[in-house]
Image (cartoon, rainbow, N blue to C red; front, side, top):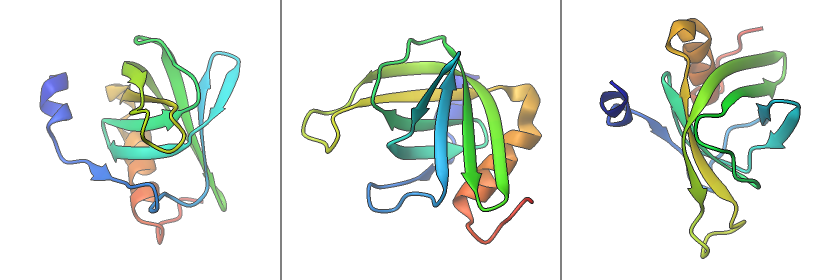
Length: 120
């Protein structure tokens, strides 16, 4: 199932085009600022942060913008170092969102990919 979703439609970002607002990754008691959002779908997200997070870790992705404050829960599907030639040279990771929380997953996807949408 994961491979089917991995090959599905995703909204991709580049370094200059990033969503407005604040995107945070919460891992246990630690909070990491997301440097770059690489891609997103209602099933998961690819992102870049400053520390390596272990595969299998349970994480929460929080997006705050204007009156919107959305949290989705997922599991780190893969992680590794960024290409050393890229700005920041941090770590990339992929997060699979929990499939039983599809309403919040879709809400996050919509508010990030269409700035005109406000959930609040």
